[in-house]
Structures are given as structure tokens and as C-alpha cells.
Length: 595
Image 1 (cartoon, helix red, strand yellow):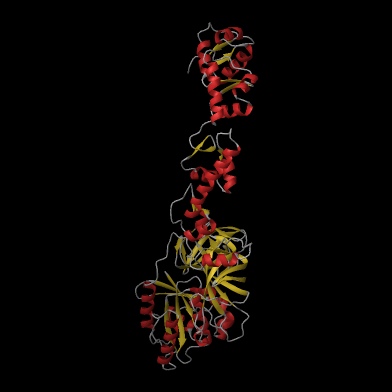
Image 2 (spheres, rainbow, N blue to C red):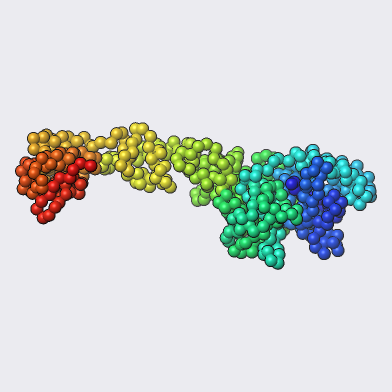
């Protein structure tokens, strides 16, 4: 299916033309039919000569219903622009064109109606010139009459060519269905309608709505029940939701969009040709401080803060689900009648902009964004570190591989973090000379990182990570402690189980802090309070005790190990805990056979 919206001045025959093409009545309200005026969005569809199905979103042309027109045009990829031969280009023709320009619509077909009432050539020439000036130079279409049928066959062929040139929608894209109608159906409950530009909705899907989730109970497209609908399509969705949704809200793929009320954006101002003004590419644009922002079927008040040049910060009256790259249309509803109220398009560059707390920050932010595309690299330059899920919710697929897990980093920031980590480790070593390295958690806090894994990923040679600590170089002991351990080893060489007392340890250079550092590094074995031996002494002791008649007593063990009771008792308890010996009763133990 393809979806095309109408556009053009009030009473130029948009609904009549849609009726002639489809055989359906697009105006839904009795008041619309009575007044001959489209007030709400209307829908109708037909089959083109190629066999493609085409749905029309018929929008109102009256200036009072511009917001409704924007709700219809916003989600669709193409427009049929209607101009009456007997009236030519009119004020709402201009305003609708300005809106299309601001929204970035580039697929358009011109239809000059009422060719039975006046020579269509002048209106056709003027309309083509206006559309070409807006970048729609290939929008030329036929002169037609919805009443007599003149030119309808040619128009159908032109519509076929138009939809054949539309970009293919991505069925795997996240869903954002802007709701343009909400109603209840007896026996079914709440039904919403909208234009699905891309993505896929299936019966049973769980989608997000403001205030809670919603489950898809049923689907219809062009009055036909469907199990699955893919964009582009007009779709009616029967929902089971916690709250009744409203027009201007959106059904969303969970976790795929950023709900935000603050964005940084780049303006694309639009000026009606009759103003005679030219918009230069980089000049600052003066906008009122309060405007209405439109996207999809949503229309919300917003405050405009200029940052510099064409970069602005928009604070929205309520959060909207947005991606970087979305275009918000800015409208001034307070302008006088006859003035064009659509002022600019605002392309979203960041949906989570940083706070501007210091003098000059706004100008720096504008300079940063003036040429920035709405992509992952630009977002990472601002936010430095982002998870893959955050990037996707902001509208950008990660450009390069993650630095760790699902974390992505700005390359320059990642390099600076590596330098900062090396400096932090060096400072920690100077301040804590007896510790084998900086704890990973302390490094995480020092660098203000959100995940411990990032710290270990940054630890590149000569930094090493062992035992939850980061050191500059291979893990080891400070030189004074290593020499003291060597002196203790010399003393224990002849009597390996004769652990010296605290005073002698201190004489050797092994105070409590030095002993603790040596034990952490595995250079000494602590078997009890104040009792340290060389590594492996416990296994060696078990080997000697295995030669005794089993079971044995503490006295027998003390003599076999040539040590004192002060050492023998805690050493035997250590062997019990290690599973090398087992205690049988108050006085006897035995060695356990090797596993």
C-alpha cells in the first residue's frame, strides 16, 4: 500500500477529486458535507492502473484548520497538491507549500482542478513555478475536473509514477504510529487510527503509550482485517490499554524512542515567495519565544531559546517520542489572518541535550552543532559514552564496534580516559606504596564511569589488572617490602616453621602494613594472627605430618615440624580449614589422603 495526503487552498476541490478517484466519500462529518468544507481528516482509497493500492489522507484547506492539515501530512511520504484553475494560487496554497517545505517533503504531484470552469494553463504555470522554487520542480501534473472526469486517467498514471518513485519503507524499523483518531467500538473497545510510515505491527504486539503499555487486539487496513501490517499503511488498531489514548499521542516500539521535552535543533526557515526575502544558509533567524511545534499528529506549545546562528533549544510543553533527525514544524498561531504562520522546520540534533550552566556555554553548543549531522558520532561527541540501547532510542545505529560490552565511546574521549586512568593509577601508587594497585572501583569513581567493565577495558599495557586492582606494570611488591621478605626467607630456610614474633618481624622491616601487603601479593602466608610463613609452608607441613603414625597430637606435630606450640596450634587449625588435616577429637588429628 501507498499513502498520499492532499494539500491546497480551501474549496479548491481536494475532496471532490479524491471522491472522483476512489468512488468514496472522504468527508466523515455531516457538518462537512452540509458546508462543503473539510474540517477533520478524511480517508479514501483506490487501486491504481499498476495494481498498487493507494490511500488518500484528505486534509482541510481552511486556515483555521491548519493544525489538522499538519496532522494529516506529517506522517505521509508524498502529497498531491491541488490548485483550482478558476482561482489559481491562493494564501492557503502558500501556507501549505511552506509547511511542506519545512517538513522536508520532496515527493509531490500537482493537480490543477476545475479545468471545466477556466483555462487551466495560467494556474498550472504559476503553481509549477511556486513548487519549483520550493525544490519540487518535478511536481508537474495534469489539469483535471472532478465533476466531468477530464484528466482523471492521466492523473491516475501520474499517481502511479509518483508512488513508484517513493523510497521503500523499512519493515524492521521501530514503530511510531501517530494517532489521528480515537473512538470506541461496541464489543471491541478502543480503536485508534493513523498512518504507519515504516515498521511492522502484528496482533498480540505489546506497544508503549504515554501512561502505560497497550496490547494490539486487532488490526484493520482499508477496512480489511489483518494479522500483520507493515508501513506505509493506513491502519486501525484495536487496543487493550490502561488509559484511553488521545490524538497526538503515539504507539511505540518499547524502548526504541526517547520520550523528551527538551531538544537541540537546527532551523530551516521558510519564507513565502511573496515576501521577497531570501534565507541565507547561516544567518540567525528571529523567532518568537513561544511557538507551537508539530510532528505527526502532535501539536505542543514550545519555548524557543536561540543558542547561536540557526541552532535553538526547544522546551516542549509535554514530552514527545523523538529521534535525532526528526523534523519539528514551528508555527506561530498568534499571527494575523492572512499571514503565513509556518515559520521554520527544526531538525532535531539531540534528544538529550546537556545542561548549559556557565557563561558562554550556549555559544559553544551552537558552534558544536552548526555542522553536526544527527548521527551516532555527533551524539557521542556530546555524551561521550552511550550504551547501544541509548543510541538506538536516540535514533542512531552505532557506527563502529563497542569499546566494551554494549558501551560506545567517542574516540577522542576514550583516548583521554586512558591517559587519565594511567595518571590516577600512578597517583594512587604514590599515596599507597604498600598496596599492590588501585582498586578497580576506586578507578571507576575517579574517572566518573558508569560501569566497572569500562575501567578494565581502559587498562592497556603497561597497566595490568589482577585481583580487582590496577597496577602500572606486572603485579609485585614495593622494593623495601620485597627485600624484607627475602630476609625473612633466609631466616626460615633452616627452620621453615619457626615463625618469628612481631618484634623480630619489625626488625626485618615487616611491620603490620608491610606484612598485609606481602600477604595480599602472595609473598607470605598468614596462618593465624601474628603468624606468617613462606608460601607453600602449609603443604610442606602436611607432607611431614603424613609420615607420623596416624592419628597424631599437637605435641607430636610440634616436634615433627621443629617449631613452638605458639606456631603449631594456629598452623594445625589452618591445615584443618584447608582440608589437609581433620580433627578427630580434642587432642588428635589425622592427615587426609590426597584427592
